[in-house]
Length: 436
Figure 1 (tube, one colour):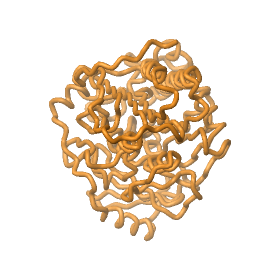
Figure 2 (tube, rainbow, N blue to C red):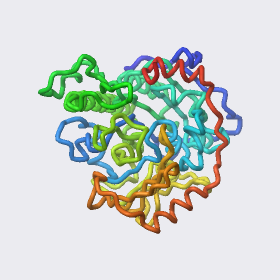
Figure 3 (cartoon, rainbow, N blue to C red):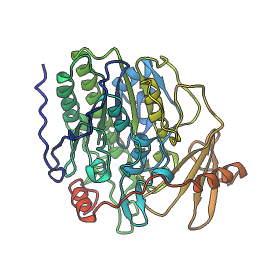
């Protein structure tokens, strides 16, 4: 038996428990029908480093099992290459052009509270709601807490994956068996620095000797990579982080079984974005719109999800919200841009991505064709991902994609995002090593 869950609200600046219990619930229904829903957001996890996507290392046995019993989308596209705008698209079913969370001019902005989000919609429908997140980007300042009755965001220090899993296990133990729930878990690993705990730090050996600081890329003052031969070492440690997260997912599944709630739960697993490992000479994420940062895993398992299916059509992270709402028997807000992942495949649609942390870039994908446009230079290049998945052969821009881009740029912002106070953000991100 897990220890009992206790709720005691403490300020986010201390990185402690936040409980959003003061929600308008006087007329809220009590949800006792439909599936439970568990949405897991991984951080920085690439599909091609998971076994179910063909990776040669045993990084993901638990996710592989869920993929085998459910549906694994082969071409899921993030809406941004870093956490805030990418996760905002998951929460709202909107593109970055619409929700406006992320960088606006030179400030980081959060979600406008007037926007519909998946936890708020599920709460209003009578679901018990739980969220635990492992980085400052998900804090109250950014608006991701709205709709969660029980909410934790560890803003000043990394929250380890096993702790997140165990906190969920404690909470699920206290939930009445006739109450439906919606839960979101965020696992910060495998974000750099790549420092998996033992025994995951040595699980995947490598021949090269680690550098003095073997958990991050060594770069010059001009941000160029000093030692490309770190690649083997850092990749092995990155893979160890993924296996650690996968074991945490195993703990979550065990908790569901222990609570007798494993048979009627819709599980969705995705990542906010990917990670660069020198494919185009870069590292980390948030600077480009190549597939190494936009291609993400997307696995669905549970009631109403076909087993052993691998859809080929491109899909978007913003498709998660309408898919969950429809499975729960709830209406989809009319402004939502995403579509139902489990409906008839749609190939004739464009999927947008933008909001890097550096110079502005915009991406439009339609089927296997992908356009990247730099508004500062006016350069528009296209890639055929079918014949050139590594995006090494730039092509002249297709007129259809340019029209799609014009349509995307014409979207009216639905959110009036507000900037997060710089002093609060800097303090939190310094604790996580984002800035020094």
